[in-house]
Image (cartoon, rainbow, N blue to C red; front, side, top):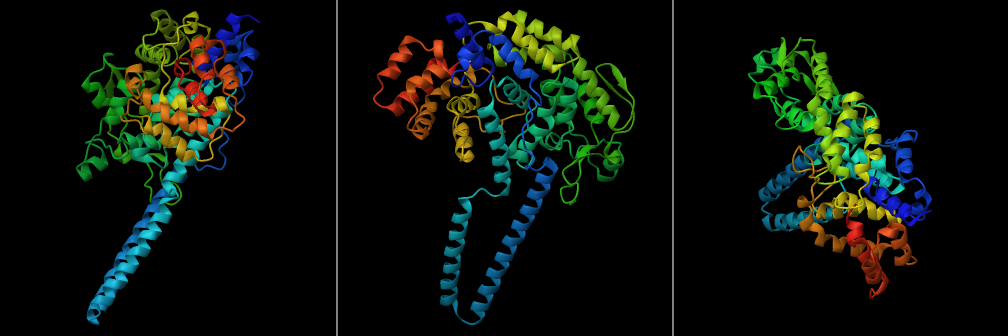
Length: 483
């Protein structure tokens, strides 16, 4: 086992996973590439044990019923208050009414404070999904597939700010099953998922000449079509026109969901013919006959095989895993594999690992807040009991879970995150304080960084004023912040 082998192993676990744990550096030093590739061969790779979690439709219906009940409760309270005030005024008991109202107000405030300590149903659903996600990162032996899930979830992002009930379930249902499958399957699953249809405003889009469009004097919403072309497949400046966007939006009319008030299937995908723009559509020079929902599926299949999509996806993968300005030869290899295999994402991932360009010793990628926070949990083996605290830490660093600021997801470039690095110190201090008292900073340094740790970093940790400070300095070390 050579020193070079250990250094490559440590680099691999940071670049492709969430960092090393325990004796893992030494364990894979003989064949770091093989260890990363083996993660792709695990049975059920990318899946999570979530039998107790509701589907996106079940969660959406539960939140709908919860909000309806809350609204009714509020109205009943307002009605009772007005009736009490009217009764007191009629009896000439304004002073008593004031006292009663004050007492009721104080009681209501006490109830509100008690309720605020516990997340309400929408937040609880999100936290339960988050717990599954963070636990998967903590338990990941290598973490490459889990990192791929995070990459694709950000590529096909939705926001909990708009659809809190479905944000976590969407990742489980649309991304995880296809993370090592074919791009066309993930694309179709993502774009037809109710969370995406609602997030990008397609649920009420209707063709101007459709039955619903004529009857309701409503029309097209182009958001979903535009973002599929610009963000999810072809990329910007790839040759499509505004006419293509409009035609594609017409193709996607009728892709919607069952109304949330429907108790059995509310929030589930449905194709509604009366919303669909009738007739043939021409997109990117190709004619698509009106075949109902199949018109859209055919269009997505062609976009998945388009050369521009291969180039767009290849560049994003290389940027995410290797460098803000990745080697053009690496991008070309990924693009070729994507084309040759018709978007086989497992083959593309293998190409990424096998390419020599992916193993440059320069560790220039700054870990995003989500990767850094998850990495702390992973390297320390801590399963968070208070998932809200972990989510809060990530949000404080500018990357709240499943809440991207726009449909293009969170940025993957250093410029977007470098200014926030000093704010990580508070999180590092808190994490260090919560580690078990037997945690040895030097031992953790050896398992987390090993040969990647510079002499300066080792000396800084060795001369720290306290164990807690030493652990915090480790988590803030330049070698730990980058991959």
